[in-house]
Amino acid sequence: MRGILSGDIDISCLGEPMVEFTRLKKSVEENYYIQSLGGDTSNCAVAAARQGAKVAYITAVGDDRFGRFAIDFWRKENIDVSGVSVFADYPTGIYFIEPAGNARDFTYYRKGSAASMMTSEKFPVEIISKSKVLHLSAISQAISNTAFQTCAYAINLAKQNAVKISYDTNLRLNLLDLKSARKLIHETAKTADILLPSLDEARLLSGKQSIKDIVEYYIKFGPDILALKCGDQGAVIAYENKIEFLSPLKVNAIDTSGAGDTFDGAFLSRLASGYSPFDAGEYAVTAAGLSVKGYGAVKAIPARKTVLKENANK
View 1 (cartoon, rainbow, N blue to C red):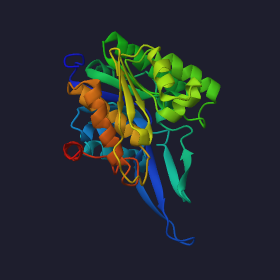
View 2: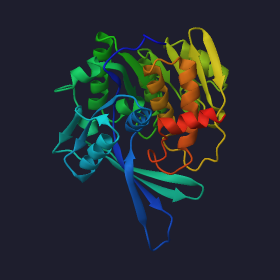
View 3: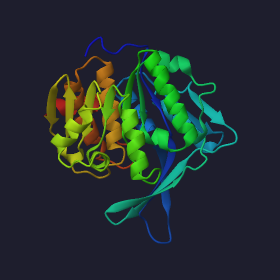
């Protein structure tokens, strides 16, 4: 993989950040919330930065306390925020996480968010043109028609500048019905150099059930690299006519929020450092496994030294 990726910025992520509020289970009378940051592409950016990658984030936030919180958060993670627009007329998206037995309920407030109003006007062209990889997801596209057009513009811009496109097929049926989502995702997947589906959503999108059939299905879309994330079953990497099944890290999972995004960021960071897709996959499986040992989308994302230490102890 050495020499395939080139650029001053390792990874540029494009999408929607959301400020996260997680309720701690106290009592009926008392509610305590922990504030953090979420959003799939933001999580990916944080994960990549914690592995030592040079990362830029392209998005829009509101001119509000939540937008300022997000920008400060990225800066502390050494993420380039020069591509973050601040809109006075639109708010930063937020969401709440509520405990529900052994599961959790999510409530989103994202309609009309600043990120959903992002356009190609004053788009940070130079960030993408200097990047090795542009990463985006189906959520980046599905939040609004404006966001879809902006993502299409960014993809074309990346192609014009020989920047690799990384695409996570993140399926959210609260944003698009399955038929519309399948059309959108599969059309975009054909443009991707690095395709990052997850097993459960891939079953819905492809109509296939077995991992083998799903891998064969998505290989036909023509990505240079396919990384199928299989949760507690590990991952499958397909590259240059070779397919490798990667075993999961054995952990007691506490919260799987953002595990797939952690995989994305760790995987892309290793590719950008010159590692093969198979080595990058092994590393990313470990990073994702470590990320489920704590609560919240980003708090438990491990740093590079933690991942390397875990791999050394295998």
